[in-house]
Length: 319
Image (cartoon, rainbow, N blue to C red; front, side):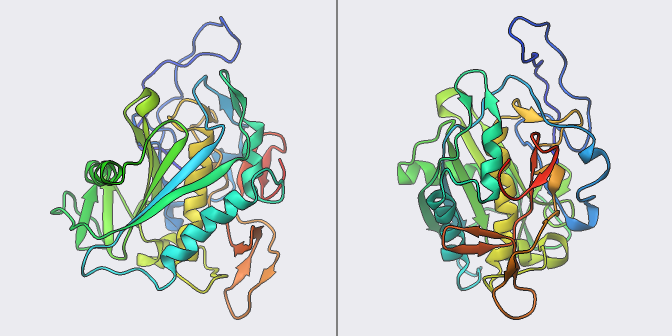
């Protein structure tokens, strides 16, 4: 995912006591601030090649998620819709990722090669903490995009996440992620970058310390299929398109939760370096455009690969 703002903090070398080095140079892929980046819309992506494949990820002394708990918020106000099985399939995906904790047979295991200086290596230990169908009314549009009549700013999305956290009594923290899935036809912009034109999703954070809120903005990918759909629907539902970009955000939050852990010299995180790169197909669930490349728990999914330093390339299994 390409970052939207450039990290301003100075980062240190991995070796304790070494002289500090400056953050990566400005680029669309390593932006600064609390919005860590985007899954680029397909018409603007350069999948699996070019600068993204030049070097491995480097560690920049920040925290990673050794374990992670996901909360899914589905913001579907009156007058808006999602596909029939959207909520159950996405919840099922996160549940299946958790069901396979510790297994090397899916893309999440690749995260276990990364670490931080406090608690060592990431463990493949994920859980779904809860989900909510949120029917709260939308605020007035705070931005304008090319594809939708309603557009929400990052600040508006964060405000809704915080409202739900408070109402539900959920506890944020450095091992907890909040995914905000908006309904079909709801757009968003972060600065000058907007959903479906520049991005399909991004992750970020607000606050700090024990109360940090890690979140992901997850627009309804099939609002504009040409921009954000991988083209394969093994579950015959719009959820398949969103699950692919959710996996991208999930893995990047695990390995670079606050923009100070793992990314390469151009600012690409593990998901960025393999965006829209899907690797080997395992089979089909029947019918056209129903290929899958991941068997996770009881589910079949079509997911992008993730970058492995160990393999110096994109992987779907192992490290």
